Each structure stands twice: as C-alpha cells, then as structure tokens.
Length: 200
Image 1: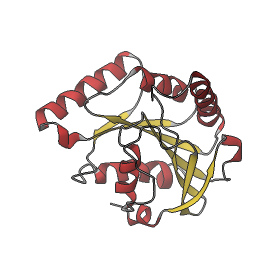
Image 2 (image 1 turned 90 degrees about the vertical axis):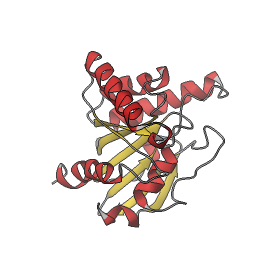
Image 3 (image 1 turned 120 degrees about the vertical axis):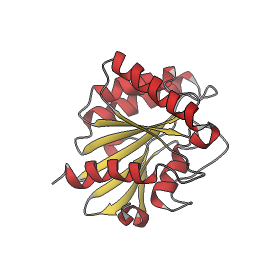
Image 4 (image 1 turned 180 degrees about the vertical axis):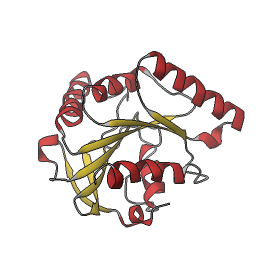
C-alpha cells in the first residue's frame, strides 16, 4: 500500500482534453455509469469526497484531475453507457475520449472499472477499442466483488480474461470491493508501476 495516494488533491476539471493541466505522467480511470468508478477512486485515495459519487448514472461529466505532486495525476474520466444521454452527447463523449486516449502523451495507463457482475459490455468494448489506438497500458478493475461468492468472482475474472485474450487485448485484471476495501493493495501496485516505476 502506498500512502502517496491518500494525499491526492483536486486540481481542476476540463470539458476537453486540450484544456487539461500539463502533466509528467498520469493514470486515468474510466467506467460505465454506475460501475463504481468514483467509489473505487475514493477507496484507493482514502478520501470519500475526492470523486463525486451519486446514485444518478452519468454524474461525472468532466475530465477531473487529482494531483499527487511532482507532475503526477490520477484522472477521473466522464462515465459512459448511460441510456438517457442524447446521441449528440454520446458522440461528444466519444470524440473527447478519442482525443484524450490517443493524443495525451503523458497517459501511462487506463484503469477500466467494470461491475464484476456485468463485465465487458458493448460500451466497455468501445472504450477498449479507443484505448488500443493509444500508447497507454490497460488494467481492468472488476468492482463490487462483495456481491458475489469467491467462486463466482473467480469465474467472472477467468471468463473476462479469456474474452480479452480472444480479442487480442493485453491487460492486467483484478477484482475489487470498495465496500470491503479488498483489492486495494493490488490496485496500488498497478498505480505504483505506472506512475513511479515506468516513469523513471
């Protein structure tokens, strides 16, 4: 566990990647609406108010940067896959995420947050396809593992890994529970690698 993440501070919000702050290296979190992305960020940083959580899907509408110091950032990307969002909003989101994931040179890794009970939805695959066009690494964080038994969680992890391999997508993967704080060490290890080891 790395306590550096517990000191994360909100830096700024941007509606477009071109207005994001200059960074040395950053890791972004993305996820379908209601997948538990904001809760995961808050658990990883031990700050329940850092990323805004809501029972209303699609609450995160902006690209939010959280500073760790020395030009390093955690980034909360807008949620996606919410049916009530207009087609124009969906197109706007896809264009913005395409620009961010492909042109953001300092982006070292993308943490894709998915509900372990419903992994790899069509919306998730859309984001993975965008991520694959860029240079960042990919880590899948399967949240809400407390909703399943150990065997069910292991089965979901295994099936998800197989589908990624069949699609030719390289990624690391883990289960996670914000409620039980399980998977926190593994998540920190991935962030450590991207932010503090690969960036050396």
